[in-house]
Image (tube, rainbow, N blue to C red):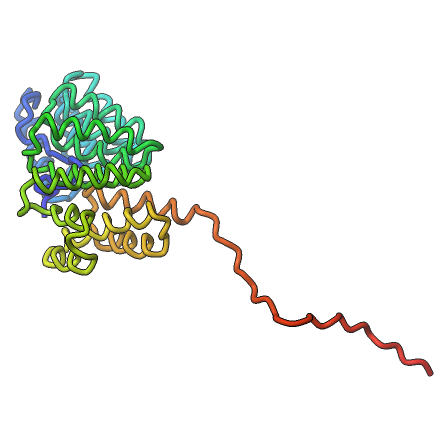
Length: 306
């Protein structure tokens, strides 16, 4: 499954047709095209090598964005940030560079910087649905997710809830309000989503679950035909459990996502983040059983006299 084809991907949109692509020389074109092919095949080290050769010919913003994408997939986040920042300095209106740099910040647990870049990307291209969904994910690792989620609702209203990413954005928004313990908003948004969204699109059943129209087992059965959908469902349920303080259930479900989820999905990185939060929470001291009746008095040693 290619990263650019994932509906819930972390916006690794390859710049296959980006208008800023440089064609300064045949040597650049040759290395760039090979690098692009490696990137599509998810052979990231080979992609980096080819983009590096291309960049020796021309300092192309497009090649920098693509090499930054490959570095991000290799978890070399500093190198990715260096390339994406250079791309932005060359083309300040390169919305893709901002979106992917936002992804890098999101993956490395820097939500405020991620949100800032997603906002800029959406200023450049208000229809960047990848930036919207990734930003909704970044809201969930911020201090006030419910307050920030208002921006996603504004986008849903502006687009008439018609985007193919609208259902995903709605579920992430409900979770943001759940994390802020605003159950009334979860109720209102999920009810609105059931009326406005395409019921045939996943993860529409999550909205039915929050409206108590289907139970936990039915929800999982709907998702189990697709490993991707099942991992995403487990992520949503794990985050929901975390919001309610059920850390045991949250750990089980988020661990499933960490082990079986798609690395380029928003939910995979949310699972990683919340598993770290669970591990950082202080563990309660074990409660020792209290014996009933009068406790025995401490026996003092008897000194025998001769």
